[in-house]
Length: 97
Image (cartoon, rainbow, N blue to C red):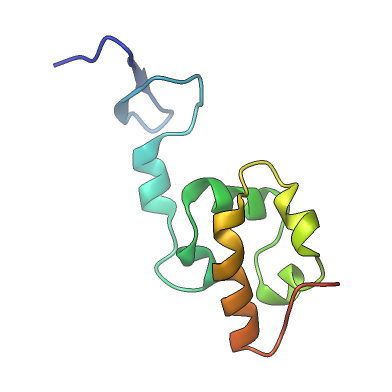
C-alpha cells in the first residue's frame, strides 16, 4: 500500500521506506544507530544527530556549551534540554553560563 503524500525511498544500505519530506535520513538506519545507553540514547534522532554533527559526544564536551548555544544546533529543540540537564547533573556538571 502506498501513501499519496509519501515517496518511496531507498537508502545506501538498501533499506526501503516512505517519506513525505526531502530529508535523506533513513529511519531504519537511524534505529540501528541509536545507542543503547548513555546520554545520547535519551534523545530523539534529530537531537542526537545535532550533537553528533557538532562533535558533542561526551557530557564533558556538552558542559562546555551554554543551553543557548546547544539550541542553535540544527535539529536540537527545547524538549531535549531537561534530559541533557539531568544527565549533566548526574555526574556533577552543568551547562556553561
